[in-house]
Length: 278
Length: 247
Image (tube, rainbow over all chains, first blue to last red; front, side, top):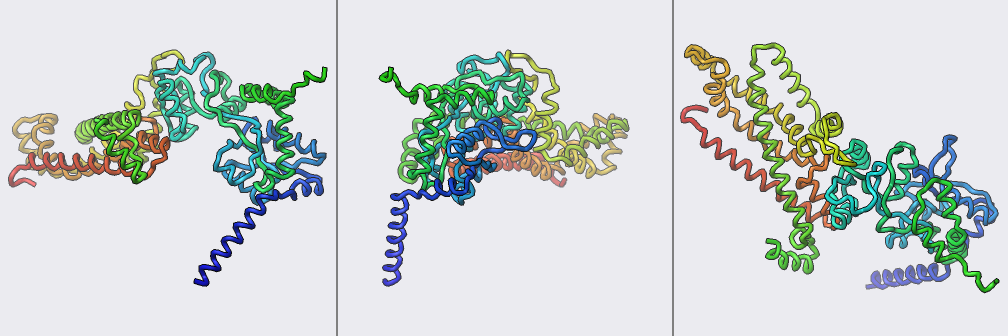
């Protein structure tokens, strides 16, 4: 009985403590970044052109430029840390990085782990890689073999919506080889990954000809308890500015990324209405 | 068919959370039925092909020409000493890209598709074992029988077809049975070159519906039943071929 009471008491205490930290978002991070004069950002190191290494080994890319914008706005220097999809959220949780801009799709389960800042800064969805001139419309893939990766959720969508014959392989390497061998008319995958392939220079005779479907926006993240504090709010302002100023469109051009409808849409949405100033 | 199954499996899903989506959703049901069809065709085609390879190969092993004998030995070594998975990928991606194909505008339709390559590769793989199995049967036929056939004026081919093979066959049926069961199970590897057989389809269904345990269960039962049927058929055959007083 006593044990049970004590356990209940402990549980309540922990609950109150957790609620307290959620209510008063921590503001340590922002201060610490300014004090140390350096911003540490986790970016991708193998995902051209978002985050990759240039021939000298330096991390560069569209997301590295975004990180630089943040450092410039704060007036501090930038340190980039390469992260991977499998460990990016842990880097943030363990305090190894102040901010994560690493091509992460914004999902409900992830929002529980890291502080994903709204609005979303980018997006990716389903598209295909195909030989130049082979396809113009999604409807043209009807009854034709389309390569894919086994287990990808959009295989079914593409098969049902457009009647494509999905030929799914175990890995991306096999699927892409089958496309190269001409075994299928296209390879269906995430558009950002396809763009990364196109940017790699190994797919010169190929293109991403269709309009991206089933977009899933990306989220950059701060530590979860900082999301509603100064640091999270500051980043929300940064993202708003990137959209409103057309900075993201400019960066897409700089890095040779096919312009996304999402970024255009967000620019139109956030562009300030200055009509009353005239 | 699906109409009768739907209420029952829907209720199971609602009551227990066990999601046998293939029995209540038309799209998944169609995929599943097609997978049964493809996997059965694949299995039968592989069994027949490997059987033919075994019989022809065992005959060629005893050929007078040294080149044919060496060629056979080489083939058996290559196919027995490499994993069937590797052979499958090799046939499809290496040999497959060298074979003639028809331009269909944007993509090519090869003369031999992924199904064809699966039959060829798995058939040759199991065939190499079948040759050795048939050889063991042939060697069990007494030399006296062979000499008696020769004395009666049989040519080598005629003696092989009419005398040696029928006797050898009865000796090696149990071993053959084993190998064919193995081959049936190996056909699941065809998922690697995207042949829409049972393994391939079921894994796609469970990634789409997040019902891995249920579909794993269906897959398991499916192969138990198939192997059961094959073993039963082979036993029937064995019984039918039995000669009183022999073997």
